[in-house]
Image: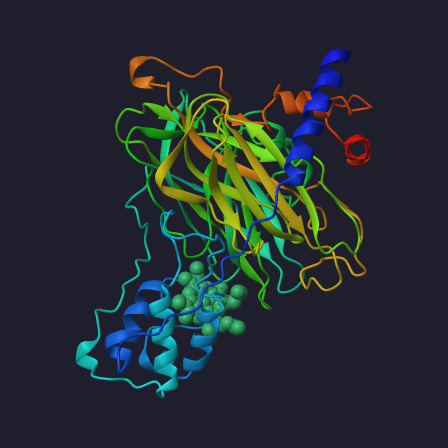
Length: 488
Ligand code: HEC
């Protein structure tokens, strides 16, 4: 099908205008916080410090978990007392990247008083206090945290080399349900805890991922940023310290009949060859599902980070497709990403912040789920603004010397996406009312406006944008923007 020329022009101008608007929005203002003092005269491990470490640190800092040492005993804590102060004061620990203040579920963030308590304790020489004051030590189950899953899937055994770059391996796991199912939660159990960094469960109903798997002789296939094909959906992800959690009753993620689960596992070599076989537990919705969770991918289509640019800015926006309720949001960039801010502008002009990650870290990606879901009326646009650091001073820069970086799947490419998880207010599946006009996954989805627009740059007509075509599109957009900027 040849694209219609008028649509091409209007579409591109609209896209450019949206970009220009976003590019002019001010960057977020960082909130400075000074730790407050505690009002205690004596601070002891047993009474004051252990409760903090048990609740906020031990989930990762216990044997067999991701953190490099345990923080369960007085001895563990005492020998690192000043280090605990340093990493909590800088907010390096616990790892939590959003600039949030209580709006998200499972927020890992110490209060100012907790930080001050650790500091005061270290300064006092890390006293133990009375062991009778110790709270009960946390217990960690080796089994499924949400109970026995309704279905358990397992990837083939994968050999992780002792050394070398991190590996992003995608395993295609067929499901053979004859009807659509609704998923309430997933739980991931890494086979070899030491090497599994994080896991994302994508869905593919096109069979394209199977082809990639078949073409790669290893178990699964390698793909860094996504799964190498446009996913049909996703069941969620897992990273260390993120406990599995069920969605509210009545809400479910669609597992379309016959879909393949594409399990993307991020492996981190640890100096010794390891074998992994990660398991995915799936929990289906218990009662009837009234609303389907959908995903809108808000992207910055123009992403072209010049070599050496320490503060490259880009952005994008997308209108919500109906009156919606936003459950959570997951920002996604690669190694050069520096910060991302996602906010909604309602039709009445009011701004609704969705998430801000001021200090992006590829290793700590989270889906930020709201305690209180956010209602957005039709006509709202979700805007994202992001910055990238492609200078030599960025220790995470995978290229030395830096090189021009554009969209792509490779470690050395970049992405700029905010995945927004939402339900449609008018949908009541229990009453037979489905929001059939709203795609399960927006933007990435086949036939979306954005895709049609991007396909105008598909010069060789193979149905996807290769690097050269993408570069052509971006350059076209940038020329347009430069022209507009020159006129205004
Ligand atoms: C979600 C998992 C997680 C939680 C929760 C967590 N840590 Fe960590 N911690 C890690 C990992 C992983 C590392 C290894 C460093 C890295 O890879 O970023 C680490 C490293 C550290 C280090 C060493 C830092 C360095 O410079 O080498 C200290 C100290 C530390 N954590 C203290 C804490 C304290 C104190 C808490 C609680 C207030 C905490 N951590 C909570 C995962 C966690």
